[in-house]
Image (tube, rainbow, N blue to C red; front, side):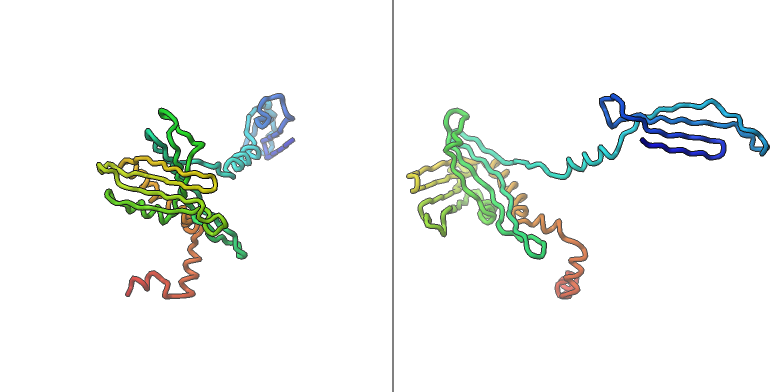
Length: 263
């Protein structure tokens, strides 16, 4: 219960927070005001006060102690978001989605990039009209450097990437993945052809899909946008502080940009 009383000359106010009601909104509770006013003659100090009839006022208010923590709780954790770009053709489908970089903590409390992000390509063969067998999909992890090769690819250029997922292990050489990107004969785009040889399960499969100029342009635009994030540069830029730059320039004046451009 909250009680507030103000008693200046000629004025009386009583603020009271009543007990909980049966309202379905327990945090919307009414506050009642009880006030008394007096008639005063300012030119006669001996004038007696004649009490006026009290007035009762009611006000419904909202408790900020309830709503503010709720808002903070909702914004405390960012929900995970899944994005990607898909290309569907008669014989196969191709989905492209980014995977974030990984960081490892240091003793100083800072973080260091331990693994660059990549873009995962998933190829699924067709199982019917507008149907694809994702149970038979084959995947290829496109590195940042390989993305650079695709970004710089001309209309008549081709490139090839080779991956061994078990490189450096006892099963090295038993799984072979080759991604070839070649121009279409009519110049309308590129072929994406993924060949997978897996001796462990006796698999030899090749999935190809034509990619038009417009679709390839979308891929290049997406690659250009996401590369700095896959390198983790956005985390470094967000952590930059003015005092850090000032400290480094004072430690080594030759690092100052003003000296660099004044030569």
